[in-house]
Image 1 (cartoon, rainbow, N blue to C red):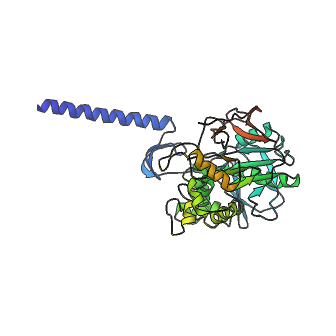
Image 2: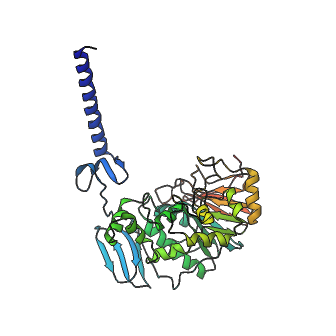
Image 3: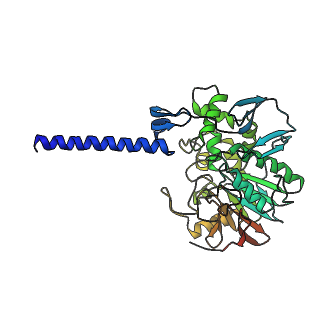
Length: 407
């Protein structure tokens, strides 16, 4: 090849690289795009500081109202001016505000108790999963079906509200979502009702200080209230045993039987039958190991490692589809699980489906949908059980019989 041709190719390559780099710079500047690796920003634009970022640590900022978080004797919140405030605690009056400006008040529970794992069902039940910090989707669904009134107070009488995991991460109103559930829990009991909060994999991640899926404002908050050099250690503080919300979340079950249904976030793998575990044993063993990352680092306790691992009630996807580690469950395997736990159906979240729907001729009901971002979005869906009838519901107020299908 001649020297002139080589020079021409090199010039063309150089111009192409420069052009590509400029395109990337423009995209990063005028979109939300960031090229990153872990906690390092390779190329990004810091909107707050109004500057480009090249090969540097990620920068996080407080971003609107957040909290409150009760850590020991301190109540910590972030106001609309992104100021971190430390206030005295009035246990009879805790004020919470969502990003939309909606406020509500609640008293702290006198005592945090571990719930039962089995309940009879003689009344109506509404179930939702995977809200992920989306306060408006939660509010819309509950108000549209008279679980709460316009003032966010319980109005479901002796009904059951089942929250099938993953109410944290991804959204901007995680604290407000958790406090609303906390508030409704006490109000429901006074009317003979029940709120069931089933732990999901994202609750587990947060309890362990893994904020990978959390908005940056939560990471910034953790860095301000923690005094560790390790980010995960600071993250862990927010839901630690020293945190009121942390104590409350740590009391929750990962699986419950309500009527003839099991509610569990991800599902039950056929492997669980090898361990001959009751619901109580599952919940107690999980509670004892909440702080251990047995998903990535299984230990010599084979039962605990299974219950927190790839095929755990938090992570198993085989009730919905094949997964890279295992195939979809068979009808016979599912029947064996249902028979062992004396139920007719398993109700799950975790694996996204286009709409609330059934599989295995109604033996599996799938709740995880992409909820809408507005208050009365028909995309926000849940499940309603009234007597022996089941309905797909949405935040617009729609209610239709749930078709029994098998895929």
